[in-house]
Length: 401
Image (cartoon, rainbow, N blue to C red; front, side, top):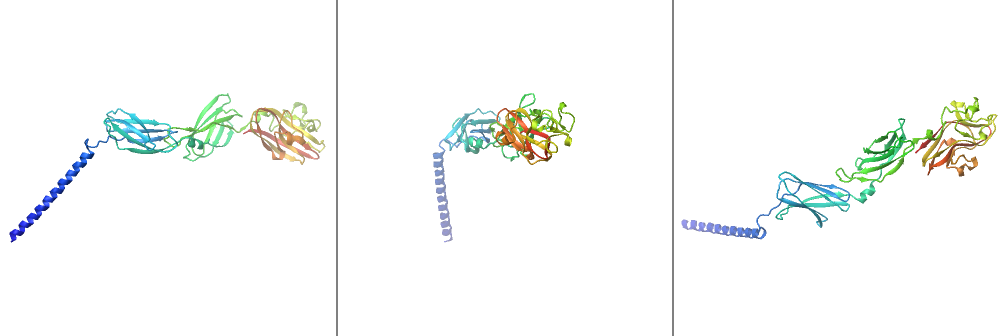
């Protein structure tokens, strides 16, 4: 009875073993069928992919670079974009060392672009893809580029022109400013100023007084971009004290004409003084007060001044100007004007508002004016004075902005 039980157990185990062998055999058959279906030509071969892929932004173009470090069987590679609708193919000849891939892709639209790169061997095997994306720049970015602002300009005592630039963000993309200017020998200079974000001041040596600069700003959209974007050239006047170029005898100590004597009242050299101002024994316009001044005075024994004028005449080139007068002691209530007028004289007091390029009350001491083309201009003082009235000017200044 015991022997029978053991025999029955052995039969059951044997059945299990047979069933397991059947299952294994069936599985192997299915694997062989899969292999025959999908690997009819043998094992799948993938050529080595491109390594160290980099794509650099440009103006409606990109540059693709990479390395081939291992697979010597690669004969070409393709770069796809626009959802694989567009591509470029580049043939290569591998060497035993490391080879470099480089291709430019032009005529791309502005915006974020995705690219896929695959390599191929001579048998047509295709590598796994390498994907990358980059921003392409174009007209929209160009339209956002503006010239870097200038906060102030001035001519320095050494004759150089100083330019103070507006501060910008470190990531603004500005890399330099190109400046064209002329020196006092009329030599044209083309200077490149490397941009720093803040506190930037530029000096242009031996700058031609009264002239302007022409400058443009260069932008690099990102640090590795392959194209630089330029703003159109812009003209900018350098603020300069041009008084000495056009005025004579314009500050203390003022000189007087030799024929006007040695008294308190004399005639100033280089200034045109009209008869109503010569109300001190035939002299006027110059006084020894306050260290010598340009002056008019009525009353106190002198006749009234009616349409009295003190001025100089010269030709100014086109530009923006500021005229100012440093006013000394004064006491007057009637109209006294500082005036710039076209031509060889100044208008009478009543016509100052209509026949002037620009004017202001002497008490305001300054005015700005614009000359659109080379023009003969008279600049100075016009006054009506009655009773005990006087004014004194210690200097005048003409600035070209």
